[in-house]
Length: 251
Image 1 (cartoon, rainbow, N blue to C red):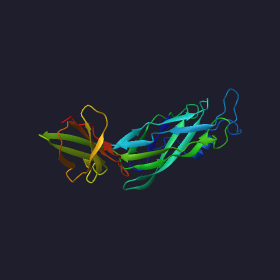
Image 2: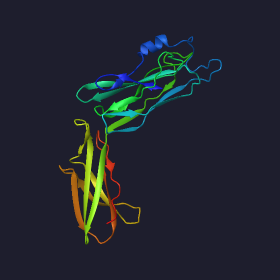
Image 3: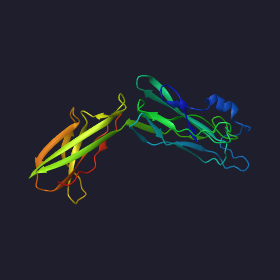
């Protein structure tokens, strides 16, 4: 159960209180040694936030799947994480993730997903900011992880191949998501490689390096009598994930 609510711009922050509020109002049991088992409980030693290692953004907002894992068997567990991010045009901001089990906050149930906008890209590390469980000291868990998520804009690539006798012409195209227009557009300057494989085989071989021009295209022509399939692969760069095309029809 993870939640967020509106924060700077279109980002969303916690729907629940601050860490201070968590510490003051949500620990109902008497203090005990961290990790010490209470009657009917196994020891609580860790709480981990699970997020994707990589996120491809190709929309104004993308919903991020998240989960929390813990060895606690109680329904009264709380934990929070925060990550420093940069929002285009607005500078630094904080992305926060808060986890509550029903026993910790029965009045407010946290089910809202966390969203990433196309204005906040780059690597982020979610660092522990709070945790507790019945009988635990503050912070309650001995181990609370710090997962990293690499958020970049998406790209798409295409390949076409044409034959005229022994002459083969290959057209590579590539487009990336642009924050300014919230849409795909020409990825001028993208660098990749055109590859080929003999029809009916599975091994791809390099053919020609490609750099996308201002029209979003790169043409390459050469001669061969062999029937081949083609594809193009563009590498990742800071803030933009690379992409590869599907195989062309054999020509």
